[in-house]
Image (cartoon, rainbow, N blue to C red; front, top):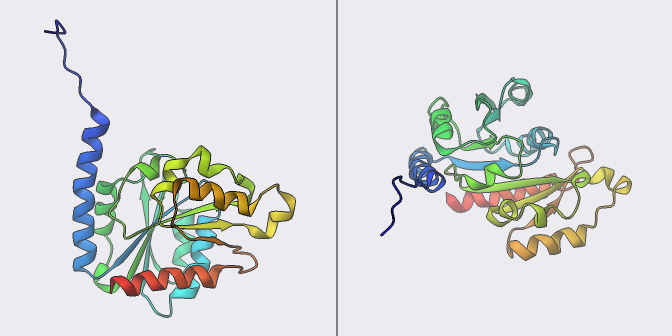
Length: 223
């Protein structure tokens, strides 16, 4: 018998359990409204917003698009996205390094889901925390930029394990960096055997149409 006079509470497990329960509410909501929901994750500076501008340009003729821009503060990205014609909402996370399901549900309830087909969450720039939290998405899409290096799947394995689709951005600057594309894919395959890897440049347009096609296919499969 232990003489311990205190209780140990596993807060992370409890928090994740609560989060996953709310994530199911998000899925129920988006299913009810016939909305496809993408969780876009990447490091700060990987080119998430610029990529989104290009992706919206490819898809806006077919789908009504809404974007949730998650940041600790500011509204720069939401302003940029609004200029594409997509519905944009800025979410301030209060310093949190990620969006969780509760934050996501609150934001979705402020969006005109009845008038949207596709909602994209641009999560807080981080390769760690966002990977831990299910936000009720249909698709996890992860970006990594050429300057970040081809070893990141080994340094941040959870992000590349849970993701469904990967885009390597800023291929136009590849000559200036020691980035081995084959090594990157091999590193991804060590933790994720099936997620497609596409190489992209928002500047030159490389791979943007292919990424749009991959997203389009998934939206149509969900129906």
